Amino acid sequence: MSRDEQLKTRWDEVVSRLSNQFADGDTLDLDAIIYLIGVQELGQFDRRFKKDHKLDLMHIAICKLLTPYGYYEFDFVDDDGWPHYTVKEQLPNLKAGEQSVLMKEAIVNYFLETEFIK
Image (cartoon, rainbow, N blue to C red; front, side, top):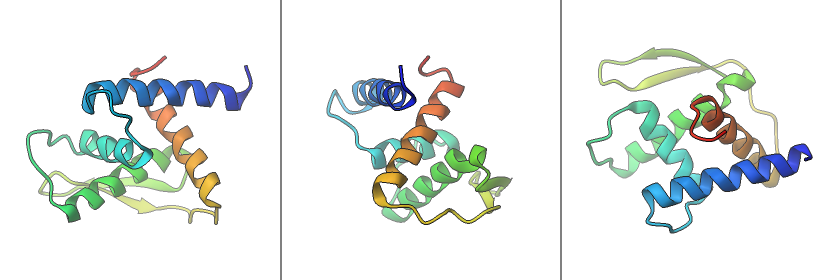
């Protein structure tokens, strides 16, 4: 199986499992999955988030997802329990499709690492 086919198969598994678990089978999009990862990384599952915090959660997720690629480094957790990251390397200028592939690959790797998928 080629690398692209393997990524697609694993991505489809992530989407299917998360959609069934969190969206009653409605298909979650990339942004929704990034948001869920942010909530997971924050670890504050029992609260509702305002719009500004939802964007912050997505930022946490993106930093976490791109840390293994050398773009971010975990720095500290603040007094409210929010993780903070430092930029180590600027992201390259990517086309929208390339950004999507990078994020899907990072998400698949995240869920492989956490053993959510195999």
